[in-house]
Length: 114
Length: 114
Image (cartoon, rainbow over the protein chains, first blue to last red):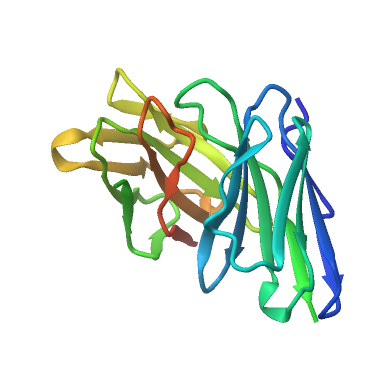
């Protein structure tokens, strides 16, 4: 099992540009979560999906953020336009249908907006 | 509503000393409880979990935690700290049977002194 795979690992972009972060969950996991981590705000849940359907997007900071899960093996988090305050580490995590299994996190994407 | 409180955002212990990281939770039902560890520049990794059964649970790297319902606590311990234990530790809670949304604490950074 390759685990949760995120790409890219690092992204540096200029303010105003579109940024797309990608995530491949573990096969068979039916929940997928997007988190953002900063020194100031800690770990924040942005949005999560169940069986490819968005369940709760109340953590998405602004309309500039959007997330999709077109199929069970792929999800994207898009920021358009990006701003310096979006600089953070973005994590994807997935979990299985087995209760109490917890989440498996990816290695994260470190986003720097200059 | 569920919540998690981790006492101490930073904890320092000497190498070879006991590690104790404190976690208290609030939940309306007997919860699922988790400890995650995050090493620098990595994602969160499941350290151990409590779902049902034995209240003392053992995890990786010599860590263990005890679920104490009367104290609503799930403190993490390790008898002898090692330099490689330096990391950030997150306590988390979810409400069974639906644990689609795990609530994370703010984290405790563990420093190991030589």
